[in-house]
Image 1 (cartoon, rainbow, N blue to C red):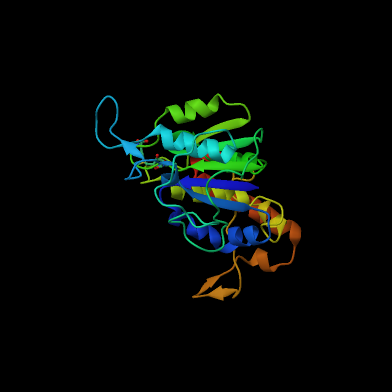
Image 2: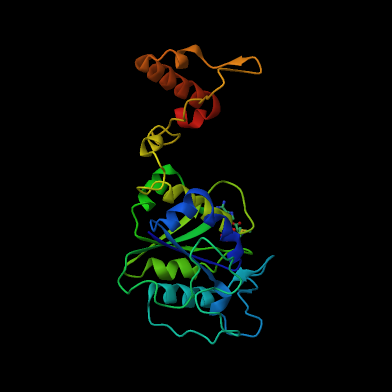
Length: 266
Ligand code: SAM
């Protein structure tokens, strides 16, 4: 899977070099490319925002750099402005070094006609959940457009929604407002990529997790020692009786869901 992230803070994506995602990149299962949106600006100040039409507080991200950046990544013919400072080959200026693959931002990363999902993290988007993670894990290419300020000019999503070979997903990771889309992109990338074959060592561990069976959380889990600070592991888990363990876990999953998430339990 090829994942591009466009942001004005490439360093925010540095944690993607760690843990499972870092290993998935090293194993060639995932290729992550982080791009600095300011590479697609043409003015001396590398401006990416402007005041909102209609007035009001804050600034809005201008559509032009977004359009140029996304066109470039999709391999569409586009006019790329002269970057104020040329970037060293193979690395995006301002991007953190290391594990994730940080490539020269312009061109060559996606052929024309590729099926691409453009993910726009936004607090006003559709809720991102496990079912969506599973669906997006089936994509071959994801491009994340990380907004800042009051968000990205709405015409960017509208424009790409109408383009052949591009699916647009405006997605929210929860009912709260972040300062930018980078953390939301990281959340989604982690949830999606851990579902790819070969990323999680034991694929069976994906089967019984929270939200995998719709409307059900996972049962509580325990490890050694059998007694810790006077608290005992439930005896059934030490019984060696697989049927009883499975029944206990199922019951616990239901109880926990009813207690913690009555909205899911229905
Ligand atoms: N004015 C926007 C609103 O009321 O919805 C909030 C903008 S927020 C300060 C800046 C950026 O953070 C957004 O463009 C989006 O990329 C990201 N963001 C904020 N909350 C988010 C959420 N719950 N899910 C996904 N992305 C979010």
